[in-house]
Every structure is written in C-alpha cells, then in structure tokens.
Length: 428
Image (cartoon, rainbow, N blue to C red):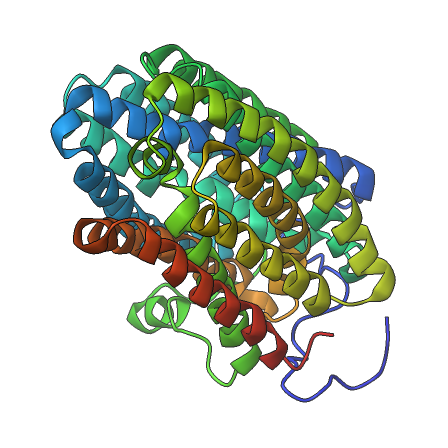
C-alpha cells in the first residue's frame, strides 16, 4: 500500500485495502469468488426490482385504473422513492453497527432478500390500486436492506485497485438483468402476475447464493459506538468537510434524474407521444431491450477494467454521461418507434459504462471507514431521490405542455451532471 499523502480533499481514513476488522473471513475469499457473488446478486435483485417498479408496475396500474394511469404511476414511484431513500440511509447506518456471528452485512442482505421476495408476491397478487400501493411501498422500505448492504461490502472486502473491475461485474449484472427483465416484461403487459412471481423466485435464489459465497466471520467482539441518544445521532450524522463526497452525490443525482425522466416513461412515450398501440409498444420495448442488451455488455466489459488499468474514474463516467445526453436527444428530434430503440441502445451503452465505474468512484470518496454503510446509503439516495422527482416532474410537464419539454429538461440536467464530475478532486 502506498505511503504517499492523500491529495487535497481526499480522506485518509478511506484505506486502499479493505480492513479485516468487520467480519471479513479469516481465510480470505478470493476476488473471483467475490466477483461471482456480486454477479449473482446483481442479476437477481435487479431482475425482480425492475419488474416491480417500472414496466410491469405501469402495466398493472393501467389494468386497475386506466383513466388515471400517468398520475398514479408518478405518485407510486415518487412515494416509493421517498421511503426507499430513508430506508437506504437507515439500513446502512444500522449495518455499520451490527454485531453478529454472521458479520454485519450478511444478516441484512438475508433480511432484504426475504422481505423483497414476499413483497413481489404481494404486488403480483394485488387486486386493487390501494392494495398494490401498500405492497409496493412496504416492499421498497424493507427490501432496501439488500442493495444498501451489498454496496457497503465493496469497500469492506474489495482492494481499491480491483474495484473498477468488480464494479463492472456488479454494475454490468444490474444493467444486463434490467434489460432482460424489460424484454420479458413486454410479453406480460396484459397479465403481469406470472412474471412477478418468477421475479420473486429469482430474488430468493440469488440472495441465498450470495450469502453462501460472500460469507463473513463473526464480529461480535468488534467495538462499536454506544447506542445511547448521542450514539444514535452520530450514526445518522451527515459527513462534514467532505466536498468530494457531495460532488459525487450531485453528479450521480443529476445524471440519473435526467435519464429517469425519459426512461421510466418508455411505455407511455411510445403510446401517447409517438402514437403506437399497446401491442406495437410491446414489440418496440422488446426489440429495444435486445439492442440495449448488446450495448450494455459492450459498455460494461470495457469501462470497468479500462478504468482500473488507467487508474481513472472521472473520464469514463463523463463519457458515459454524454452518451445519456445523446440518447435523450434522439426521440426529441425523431418522433418514431425506431427512435426509442436507438435511445435504448445508446443509453444502454452509457449505463453499462456508468454503472461499471460509478460504484468504484463512490467507494473512493467516503469520509470514514467506520461509517461506510451509512455514507454509501446516503450516496445511494442519489439513485432513489431522482425516482421521487422524475415521475412527478415528467407528469407535471406532460400535463402542462406535452412530452417535448420533458426531453429538453432531461438533456439540460444530464449535461450539468456530466460536468459536475470534474469538481471531484481526490479521484482521477
């Protein structure tokens, strides 16, 4: 490990190597085994979550209340985003202070797996909008223990020089699984239940495999802060004196906000903006998903390993961000079904590159090794808060002026996010 002093605004407490103080097995688990674990869990939880929160949620709402579908979909995703934001932060802080014979992250990953599986089953069987919303919100709150704890294991367990590669494995698995879920979901728009139940099974199996592969040792003897009033307040304190942490948060926030404003309304854009029938939209979503599947793989395979080899994170993320901007421009200037297929292909390339490097960047701006789960939970809200704002913003803009201003607003936000990455000073 290097003895060089950190650059200005870097945080010395964030070690280049993972620490063994928090339940890492005494017989170290190899990078390949950890990579396999991250691959499986990335595929599993994103598959189920994509089905529950995007196309099939929109389809189920349309079945239950077609007259208010845009408003209800925007409301559901916004409220779920708000509750998930809080949950990620809370579960991250709680896992930092968890002491069990199974370690501090694994128990919460198991908890999130079980509650997520139950939530998907309840969503699949909901027979009214009220029941659907209750199941969807409960799912988002409890399931968040899984992604929050999995991401916190990166700085716990992965050496810094390998984080780009394993970030590519995990991020690539997510975008790949999301694309596959979108393709399959297009065949279940009139009856989402069977596929949602299949998603529940995939999540349960994937979580179980991860727990077995990425085991932790007991950490019951590791000291922790007292859980009195002062200790609880300290657990949820926002980092101070960490400008790079907040620039990383802001960049991710803006990029995903701009993308979600268009991407999450794909079904309605095809039917209401472009004018396709539901059957034509389903075919378009399926073919676009196949195209994005290819581009996601390309972006993932190259960006993460190249980032590790060059020792740079910001440049690959900037390039990926500008691909988002190009993608959003396509349906704005070319109002056809094929335009959304091109949008899916270019945004897929950007997502593959972005997610394969972004997780590594997030672990390198953390202010303290002792609050990794909480701080990564806070950074993860840059994923969830845009999900609150994006549907409300898109629904409001569409109601007032149609879809064209949505694309323009998205473009501006994405470009701002892309350039804000260069404000981070401690990471190359």
